[in-house]
Image 1 (spheres, one colour):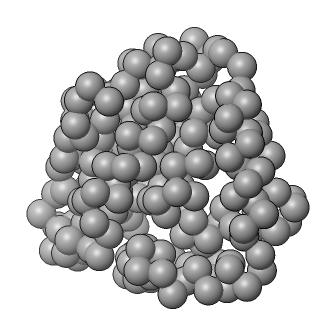
Image 2 (tube, one colour):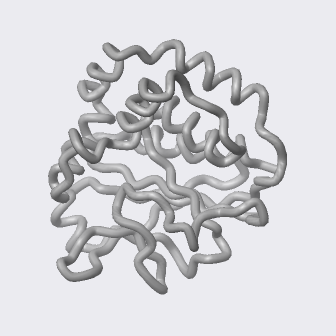
Image 3 (cartoon, rainbow, N blue to C red):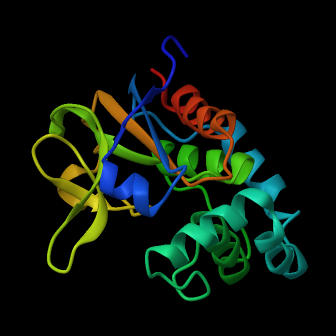
Length: 200
């Protein structure tokens, strides 16, 4: 990775509601047109063999997963219904019987999540204006990721279709919003993992 992740902006009203919340962003060149990486496919297959039902149940005791669960509840989301990114991936593994390889970016985001337990959101960098920020928007107000122009997605959500990368995207803005209790190094590792796997 040529650059380090940059801290985004957490607006004061959000920082008061969610002390310790941090947002990290990293802009990287990407080649999303190439075929899936056999090494990544093998790694996903290997990881799938490790995640049994018992592991899924125990996951919520993990320090990072617990931090996300606390943050979810704090913003009014029941993590037993709308699961944290890591728990959702594990439940999907049980449903599908594995981690199917899909495309370069999807595989990279999943592998980074499984390795670090930190969710990364990928945007088409050309669609964004200014730095990433966590703020409130809407009626009733909700906490969202935004750029200088508009709200982009709910906090811990995925990029909306019009902002999501396509195979023609040349640069990604990778974003990791982490609640209190998640070490910065875990977010950096997640962003770096995705960056390495999508690099041209």
